[in-house]
Length: 126
Image (cartoon, rainbow, N blue to C red; front, side, top):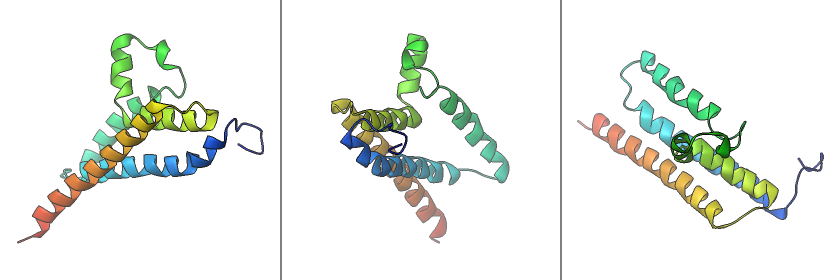
């Protein structure tokens, strides 16, 4: 981005840690979800969730392109928060909502790890 002149703010330095936070969020949610799967065929449900989240994450179209009902659904997805966080950091439009997105991603990641830890702890103890 820097080589192409696309960095508009020094906040872009925090884009790498923010991307790591997004990865932690999805890893936590993923491990939390997979500990409830009964067989490998249940992984189809992961695709059932991730594909619409990918298409409606406000990456390809602005959030205003969707109806108000869809906007509320999109805003609670972790991918939207990740996109909004990284977009704010790289464009320099950092505000209080940026911290809300970061906190939301951290809470979801910790919750997913906690669910998986509790579930796997119960299953592994005699």
